[in-house]
Amino acid sequence: MPYILPETVSKAREMDLLTYLRNYEPDELVHFGGNTYCTREHDSLKISNGKWCWFSRGIGGTSALDYLIKVKEIPFLDAVERITGQAAIQPPVFVSRNEQEKHKVLLLPKVSKNTSRAEEYLARRGIDREIITFCLQTGRLYESEPYHNAVFVGLDKDGKARYANLRGIGSDFIGDANGSDKRYSFGIPAAGQSSTLHLFESAIDLLSFGTLLKMEGIDWRRDNLLSLAGVYKPRSRVEDSTLPAALKQYLADNPYIRKVVLRLDNDPAGRLASHTIQTLLAQQYGLVSTTRLPPQGKDYNDYLCIRRGLTITKRREKAPAR
Image 1: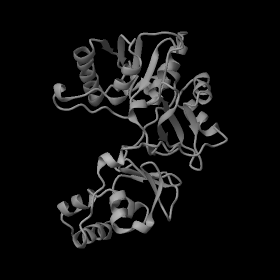
Image 2: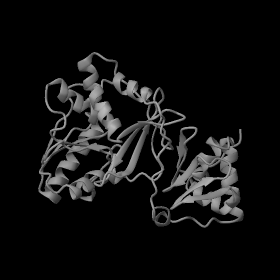
Image 3: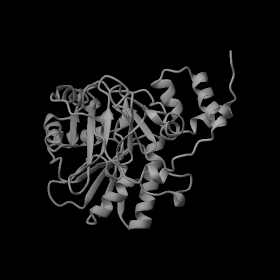
């Protein structure tokens, strides 16, 4: 069996798709708008901010190698050899990260006229129907087509969509829409004035907490609710870490916040994240913060499902390229 050195594979993975197409297949690259491109062969395959996503197929990645394997269906070894071979003949001119991120254009998947699959998916996870309806009516949730993902939309302070997270219904697919700005992740403000912010890892955990409040007869919109755009991973030293981008932006946009309640996952990563965020909030903002882990289960959706006697949804670990 042919063998390729690990360092050769690593070198091949360094090349992003925009750089590859610009250097070696320029006729295949089509400018879509802003810093977003698509390919001539697949107009639903969008390239932006160092990533690519083939929306019609629900797959994506970060590198040219991912593209050659997943889209062009070239065997792994052949794909590595194609990239390294072309680079040896004509060294690539890399696209700088600053150039790629200069203008972010959020590319939202097409909206399905029917939201029944997304509604039933969230209902199976225990989310209250009234809360689901609220999210649909306020543009924070919709169902995409043709793959019928549940799309959670993050809005800025002016109500403009700036971020979107896609979750597969009946699959393990999870990914952000191209051009998503992680400073504006999914959240729901308090119905009135509140100086308290509850922080969650995911939109579904946020909605689960709201459902739990309703089950206790408590107004689920009495405080501000915000989810992070994925798992927050602090540096090994707290002093070298920064707050999650979504939390920093929220505090900048809402200076009246005085208390943050951290409701992250009850696992080593979640507990470390909570400790780091608490320390940084005290040092940098002088804010009071507390950690409230779910009483049972790994996260608040687990706890909600336990309370309601529902099956806990378990997803396989997401592949790094997705």
